[in-house]
Image 1 (cartoon, rainbow, N blue to C red):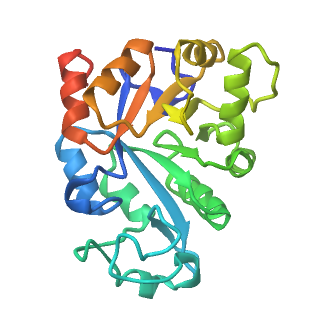
Image 2: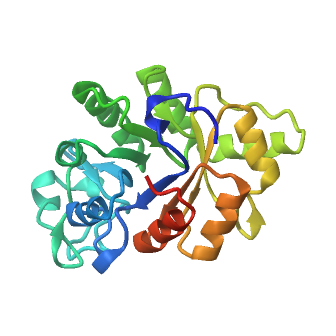
Length: 254
């Protein structure tokens, strides 16, 4: 484990993340899912944000409502009054991220900015609520997360986007590829398009730069064990009981 560079990472041991709150009953990214994760002892939650047509910041993964709700259409094209009528798996409403911050005051959030219009509202919300120690901002777009870092300053914890991860991977092979300074973690898949991303070389390179390595989305116990053996600093999972059991058996559940 690396020494935390940011209070967000102040956790005794590797971090277990509830990815979208877990997949119980198909209720991803709902308050019900996060309540279940909370009841299991999780304190780090992963979610995603989009903005509605009228600027409300919604915790939701997809661009459209169609895959997981009984609603239809692009969130960016719909007002909150319409989005709030949709039900995930026909049961649970989509939450506003502000309401999740309020409902789970002891939780820390890893937030993926899914679309550029969500960037400013998210930073404004973090600033308004003083949630600097509770939120780490990431995105597939390195440009987007770098813009959030510039807007918020060093109080904001950020992870690398794809370009940052690529730079770190190349640096692990000795290629002097430029990478953004100021990030606190590299959040990566175990492999991409069949090509391994996380190995001992990658973890050592990240740690040498003071970065933690968080791996997503890992649902099999043997893969969790192998990654922890490599020295990764966090695992995101849909299978909350499985990850808790692995951490507990290793004396790492805190």
